[in-house]
Amino acid sequence: MSSEIAQFKKDSPMSGTLRMDRMSHIWCPGCGIGSEVNAFAEAVKRSGIDPDKLAVVSGIGCTGRVAGYVDFDSIHTTHGRAIPVATGLKLARPDMKVVVFSGEGDLTGIGGNHFIHAARRNMDIVVICNNNFTYGMTGGQVTPTTPHSAISSTTPFGNHEYPFNLPFLADAAGATYIARWTSMHSRNLIQSIEEALSRKGFSFIEVISPCTTLYLRRNRLGDGVDALQFYQENAVLKHGADTRDLDIDFQGKITIGKFVEKDKPTYIEALDKRCVQVVGDDYELYGKTVPEREAEEKAEKERVAARRAAVLAEEEKSKAKAAKVVTKISAKIPVKTAAKKAVAKTPAATAKKAATKVAAKTVKKTAATAKAASKTTAKAAAKKTTAKAAVKKTRK
Ligand SMILES: Cc1ncc(C[n+]2csc(CCOP(=O)(O)OP(=O)(O)O)c2C)c(N)n1
Ligand code: SF4
Ligand SMILES: [Mg+2]
Image 1 (cartoon, helix red, strand yellow):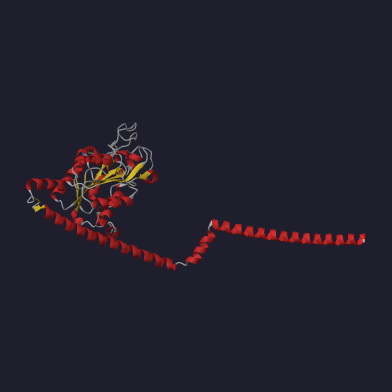
Image 2 (cartoon, rainbow, N blue to C red):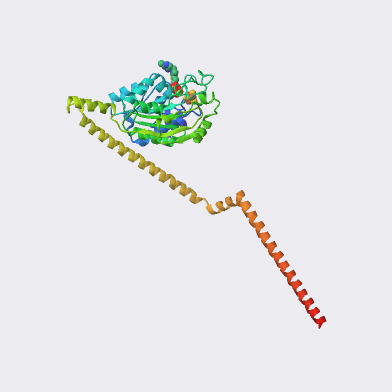
């Protein structure tokens, strides 16, 4: 790697959250996974979470490769096992934020049982699911979310199965935060991930992003840009929508938004509650009583809030700096002359100018005609008067 490229990677705003030394990544051009990872990295930066207290777990598949590109502790585990591994990690290190980044096949096909039970337990983890409607890494087979009638390598005549509505599945199983976006909705996605990172309980975020190489191409739906345009025209924002109404039909409207956010004791909190009831206030977990752990948690929350405030203040500062630079540059541009020239050059301005000219000419012409007419009338009147006088004179 040339030293320039190395420096470029080091200077990247994503350095520190993504492993820039591992770029470029493996994902295809137009694939939405890259922008999802970017949104995730941005959300982590803004959240104020200590990077040493964040871990990412992925299973197998194109989406599963995310674990290899984040600059946090991460585990690239076996197919369908991201959730049990994340659960184990959370139980061993309850002070850590644990995030699962997974494909829909990994998460709700082979790993479906783990998914519903982690949601049922309200396990305190964040699950981001890249739903690309296919098994991308293995050649584009049908998955539990492939829309009805869509073509895949294993459904060449169109999918005849009934797909999962993932937010409904998560809701029915007990998830306490559920949202859906597309890979085009980066800002919403950043905000949603940030929200999920700052709360407790099983948070599920689905990101719709059809595999460009195997799903879009096979279904003759164009490329990544066409997909973005499709989302722009067909995504319908509906916060709080009933999760039963969130089915995705082939090329139909896609409802996006935050559908569920509720408080419920997490797995560990429920365990604490039960054990205090049975054992009494002396009950300890991880060698600490419940109030001791609660005090530690509160202190960490305050540290996170302080870090978040510092990040946001820094952001505001650089925004103000950028605005100053823009003002400085624009001050150097002779705005009036440039603006006048620009206005004069526009077709609308030319048309306006021409119209004014024609109108002025017409007015002038009309005035001249009127003048001439009045002259003629006056002359005629004078002639008439002279004739009348002559007649009068003759009569006399
Ligand atoms: C136990 C096991 N079964 C099957 C596979 C093959 N396999 C690897 S990735 C994958 C599909 C992943 O699909 P998805 O989770 O949707 O991720 P994507 O590639 O679409 O992002 C499969 C079936 C495997 N690695 N392990
Ligand atoms: S095969 Fe599909 S999911 Fe995998 S990187 Fe390419 S476009 Fe993305
Ligand atoms: Mg997939």
